[in-house]
Amino acid sequence: MYDSTLVLRIFGALGIFSPLVVSFFLTSGIALAHQQLGDYPLCEASAALQISCPGSHDPCLLVGDNEQQDKLFVFPMSADGHLQGMNQRELDLGSQEISDIEALAPGSAGKILLFGSHSRNTKCEDKEKRRRFASISISGDSVTDVQIVESKKIKCQHLFDGNMLKDPALQAVCSAIDSAEEQAKTVAKQLEDGSITEEETKARCNEITPFNAEGAVAIPMAVSPDVWIGLRAPLLAQHPNHPEYEQLALLLHMKDLTAYAFSGVAFLDLGGRGVRELAFRGGEVWVIAGPAPDKAEPFQLWRFAASMLSHGAIINPKLVATLPASAEGLVVSDKVAYVIIDGAADKDNKRCPTAASYQIIELSAL
Image (cartoon, rainbow, N blue to C red; front, side, top):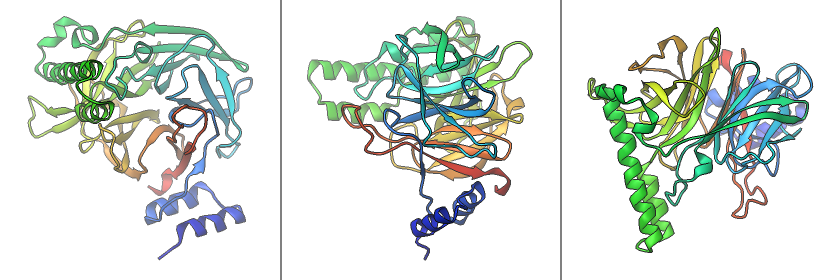
C-alpha cells in the first residue's frame, strides 16, 4: 500500500507536482494532499471565477469567502495555468457588504456578479445581508461601481411570477421551498422562546434544509449572459410528472438582474445531491454536487451541455469525478479544472485552524 503523503512530498521536492501527477493520484484512488490556497483572512473559500488580473490581462483566480462580507481575494496564474496559491491579494468592497458569498459569475460589459446564499444561518435565522447579490467592476486594485440588490424574504410569491405557479412542476418546487422555510421559521422561533437549545436548533435546521443557493452560472449570450442559480437545498423529493425522478437538484433561471426573481426552473439528477458550485466552459455547464444537509460525504463533479437548459427540463448530467468533501469553488479551463476546497475559521474568525486549499484535475485524463 502506498504512503501517498510521502510520495507527494517526493514529487514536490523533485518539482513535478503537475496537473498530470494530480490526475494520476485522483484516478488511481490514492489520497491526494491539498495544496494550500492563501491564508487568513481567507479561510472558508466558497466561490471562484477566472478573471483578468487587476491592472493586466494575465489570468487570475478570484475567490470569495463565505465568512468575509467585504473582501474578495485574487491569486495570479502562471503562463502554464499553474495557480500561485500563496500569492494572495485582497480586494475591498468598502462599506458594501454581502454575507455568505457562495457564487461568482461573469456579468455583461466586464462586470462580475456576486451572490449571497439567501440562506438561513445555523440557528435557522433569516439574515438580510445574506439576501443580496451585486454587480461590481474591478479597476486596478480597487472594486468599483458596486451595485447591490436587496432581495425579499424567500417565498415563492416573491421568487416567481404568479402566472407561472399553475405549472404542476413549479407548484411542487414551490411546495418544497415554502414548506422548508415555514419549518425553519418555526425552529428559529422556538430557539428565541428558549424552548430548544442552540445545539438542537442547529441539528433540526440542518435536517430541514431550507433554501440555500450555492451556485451561479452565466451562459454567454449576444447581449447579456443567461444566469442560472443552483440550489444546494431544498431538493425536489419527487417530480410530479415523472415520479421515477426523486431528490432532484434545482436550477432557477433569473429573469434579469434587477431583482432576485426567476422565469423558470430546470431539474438535475445528481444522485440525491444538491448544487454546491456551477461553472461554464466550452458549451458545457460543470457542477459540483454535495449533500443538501451538512454531513461527511464525498462530493462529485458532473457536467452537461448548456443547450439542455430550459424551463421544465430534467437533465441527467455525466459524472466526471469524485471530489473531497467541502469542495466549494470551481473554475474550468481548456485543460484543467481547479477545485477550491473550503477551510475553517475559528469561532472568532481571527485565524484559520484549517486553511483553504485547492486541487487540479487534468481533464484530458478523465
